[in-house]
Amino acid sequence: MTSSNVLKLASLLLIVCMAMTSAPEAADAAITCSDVVNRLMPCISYVQNGGQPTATCCNGVNTLYAQAQTSADRQSVCKCIKSAISGFQYSNFNLGNAATLPDKCNLHIPYKISPSIDCNKVQ
Image 1 (cartoon, rainbow, N blue to C red):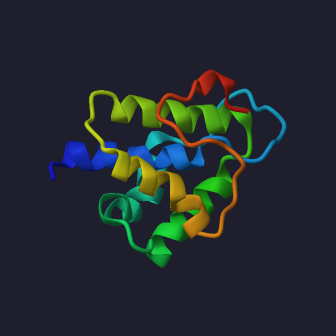
Image 2 (cartoon, rainbow, N blue to C red):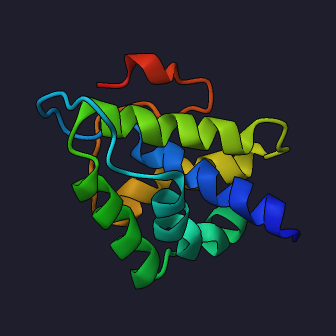
């Protein structure tokens, strides 16, 4: 897999963490695309192959969840993912694995995971 596709697949994982808990709005997002990719990179194997995510993957997902405390952070994360996956071919299998990642990592978020999410509506 090319590094470009790895980055795009890693960013697909970010969809899993789009809408985090509610918190006061901040003027600027504090989380960068680089932060997102670094946190989710260990989850690529799970998204590609299924099975059980590694502890490193779940630690990254949970850390990203904890860091995205404002609407600006969550919208920034969302926009980063959408930008990275634009033009990327992914399957229902990949999307299904990405969607189940929070539950597999014992992180329960009450949101529909979808690449068509409107990032401006993420609170």
